Image (cartoon, rainbow, N blue to C red; front, side, top):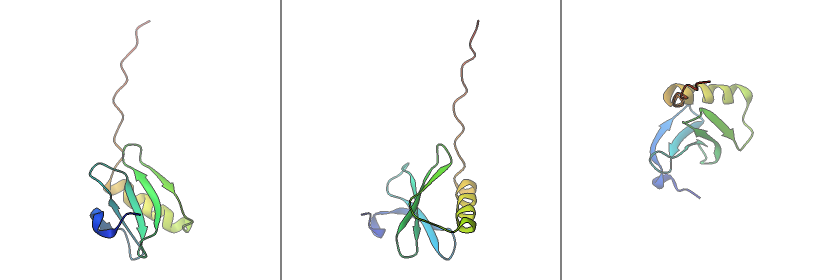
Length: 83
């Protein structure tokens, strides 16, 4: 289990949730104020994988906050194929 002191750059999402990374460039973990991991956010894809039940309104708010602070990285352009 990750300890609070091992996390890097914790950011408060709202009064009930915060997020942080366990290592630079790693996935962003979303925690409750009780330090339960509720989701992992992949900055490369912009997808959040939910591990616990969270109210739909809270989930939408957290996903919006994450996508604004950590926008998905656009994939490299595909090379044009010739026929």
